[in-house]
Length: 400
Image 1 (cartoon, rainbow, N blue to C red):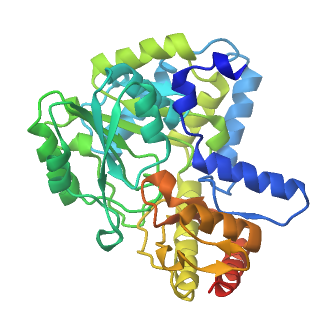
Image 2 (image 1 turned 90 degrees about the horizontal axis):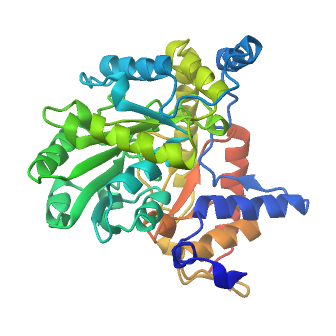
């Protein structure tokens, strides 16, 4: 049956984070004690008041039918209100909001709606693994601008200006960033905005899914800057800040023409998201924010713990993440080293060695556009993190 598969699907790479999680599950199934630090998934449970809202919605019996394609009106209005009051995106209205089955779905909708064959999309790298594959699936060409460890993995407005061409259709970045945890300041985003405003018909996709896990206390939305609302598609959702990964609720805020286009494509692909999940999301957005704030405090504590443990491993180089729940250390010092018949040639080999020797799953940085690095998620208990870092340190000490 392989002969009937399209060139499109044959050319697509599997998500590296999901692939590593799959390998970890297979080893767990064999009875091996694997500590998984590969998936970007909160280890907290969804807050109780959000769970209760879903139960109440079931008991009401009103949300079993197809939901509106763009999402329930009250949820869209609440999202717009949140964006006006918390993100200073004053133009945001319900008509600008499209609710989808997760932020990944939202990003796919966007690029399927704006990309023509051969259009270029500038990606701030390191980048979330699915950006480039979604862009290529839509017929676009990813163009990477690379931030390095010395600059906290943040590419600059100057790099963006040099990368934009006559074929550029869009720019995409995340802040706080997956995989690096870096956060763009208002000044850095203002400089990026000025570059974009120089180019007619270039839009920016701002992935803000980790907004609530920001240790700087100063989240900035580029859509709030003068002249940027009509040039920006803001992507966000409930998975990370509300520990609702499995509920699958994400959204965009976009100019009306693009919002309608995303609603149109969604009507053909999935229709509206699950009604019960949307009621839960509404409770998350409008209810008690203390659980989300407590989770963010716990992530900060874990970040500091892992930072100290990483400092104890010779050869590991890292910056201090300002948000999300990842470290993105440079492990190139181990390339060329070996233990027994295993040689570490690259970050892929490094991750496989750590999985097999230390029984800890990480993700290769090559999947994120940074082949000298690996991604380590600290969305795990402090006990697991201590044990995982001990195992990694012991495994790396065996290399020579």
